[in-house]
Amino acid sequence: MRERTEPGSIDEQLFALAAGELEPAARARVEELVETEPALRARLEWYEAVCHGVVSTLPALDALPATDEIIERIRGRTARRGFFAWLAGTALKPAAALLALLVIVQGAVIAMLALERADTTAVRSAASGAQTVFLVVAFDPQASEAGIRALLLQAGATIVDGPKQLGEYRLAVSANRGQFARSLLEQSRIVEYVRPEKP
Image (cartoon, rainbow, N blue to C red):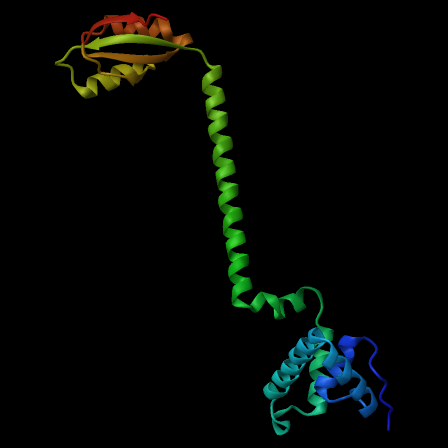
C-alpha cells in the first residue's frame, strides 16, 4: 500500500481536508489553523463546496466506460494532430463555425470595397487629367429629345447642367473636340445659340 504524503501548501492542505484525504494528525493541525484564521475558514468552505459539487455530478460507477475503452479514446485523441485535430474539435462547434463564416464574409466585403474604391479613384484621376471645355447652349423648344441626343452624340458632348431658367444647358466637351463641337452646334437648326462658358 502506497504511503500518502502530506500536502505542502496551505491551499493543498485545505483541499485535502475538504476531500477527506488528510491523516488524523495533519487534519488536527489544519483544523486548528482554520479555527484561528477566518480567511482560511472561507477557503475551506469553498473547497468543500467544490468537492461536493464534483462528487454529486459524477455518474454512477456502472455507467462509466470500461478501462480499455477509456484508453482507446485517449489514444485516438493523441493520434489526431494538425488540421484533422482542429477539424474534429473546434471546426465542428456551431459557434466557431459561425465566427469563421463571419470572418470570411467580412473579408470578402472589404476586398470588394477596396477594389471598387481603386476603380473609382482611377476613373477620377483619368477624368481630372483630361482637359474639358464647357459650352452654354439653348436648344429650340420645339426640338425633339431624340434629335438633341443625336446631336450631342455627334458632337461628343455631355449635358452636365440644365435646363436653367432661360432654357440653357451646360455641356462638357473634351478640349480636343471643343472647336468641332461648337461649330457643329452653331450650324444645327435645333440650336438657338451656343457660346463658351465664361471662366
